[in-house]
Length: 245
Image (cartoon, rainbow, N blue to C red; front, side, top):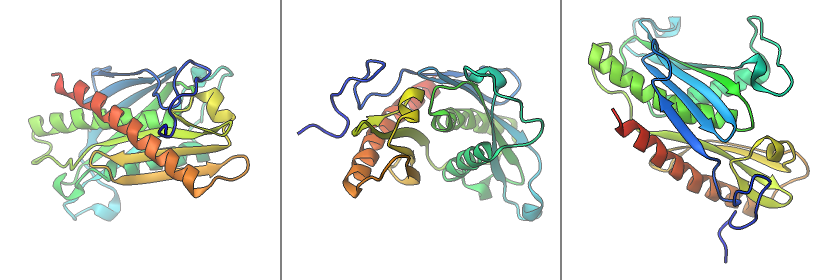
């Protein structure tokens, strides 16, 4: 019996269980200690990680650090120009940046950071579905580079990272379970999931919504199984990239 997502050619020629072509370019800009351009298919996101020698008011005097994220889409990232936010963050962007922050804090020991904040900035240069999952995957690599920089410069006294993190989307399209949806698939999906996991297989977040109709527990399990397989492939690429100096 085929595993969930095997077979079934898609609009871009992929198998149902196949990730889009993925590329991670480190040190993409020169000022942020962590800077990554990540490509997942036609989706491209610039992810940076920077230090601030301060923490939010509720953490002052605690000795603990903080990690937070901001997310935005550039005007030309979609076929129809997207208006600039003009200083306001819309509801979708707020949801996504909170997801990115939660996902990365899950693998950071804040008590080992001192009273420093790591800012994660994810700017979508080109959007073709899966921008939040691409942001998490790129932001993790940027975070690792920023931590290495912080240790080398004495900003950090010890490595606060406790693991790795990866994310991918999946869904039901035409009744079939598909991995890593592009925009065409995502916009027509009956069910849309985003799954975030740690390197040791623990779930950080499972976002699942039935856009049209409903889904069964069996279908949900098939989707989670498929995303787990995909995220393990993402971990492999992240690790390969991070081994290079």
